[in-house]
Image 1: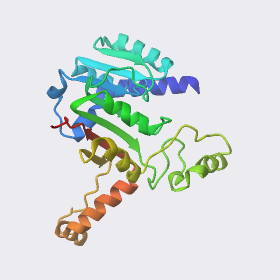
Image 2 (image 1 turned 135 degrees about the vertical axis):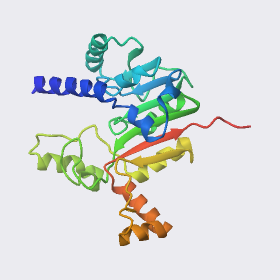
Image 3 (image 1 turned 90 degrees about the horizontal axis):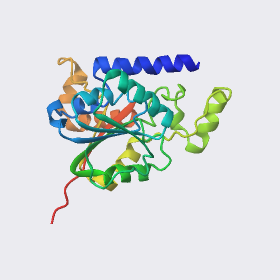
Image 4 (image 1 turned 120 degrees about the horizontal axis):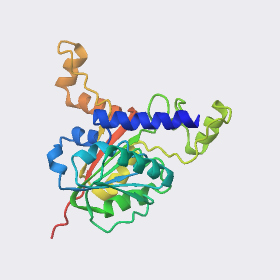
Length: 257
């Protein structure tokens, strides 16, 4: 099992390098060009083995990757050496107490991290603190109310249960082979509440699906979708409530006055 896991992670890193995946998809999603990040200070929180961060090192000169797991960082360091990457600095630390000064980074990335931290409000506060004025915070997270299998345990409808029953539900259905400790997926409503606390109205939420039922053009439902704004808003809202995952961009406004 251990060797298979190591092989899987190595393959994931190599695929990311070859395909340009990882945090790059945030930039693509929100229409940012690669040349815009060349001189920017960037932090990747919860980098793991750096398989998401490495593709970004090709376009950024000031890049720091942080993770709380020292073993993960040791593997990441070996991969960096083998790939000849010298402009990516590794740091071991907690995402709820970032070891950086205020307003240090232009962009902060956190892919699949917020659902694993103990204090999600503190995590949001810390990433906001280290972000420069007019900087961007990009993060993604699985949706609590996804109509499908929970990505960590592969069991359907976990998020629809009260939080106190989730662990028991997973234990029973897996015969105690899996646990649901250390996982707290957020719903769209919970994300909105958290984002408004720090970013007010300066944020955008996308989904991996981004439903658009306006095609084919001659379909009845497509005509209704294009003609009625209320119907479009309803479809978009349902997509965000029940999608597989959310992709967020928060913009830190420079104080005025």
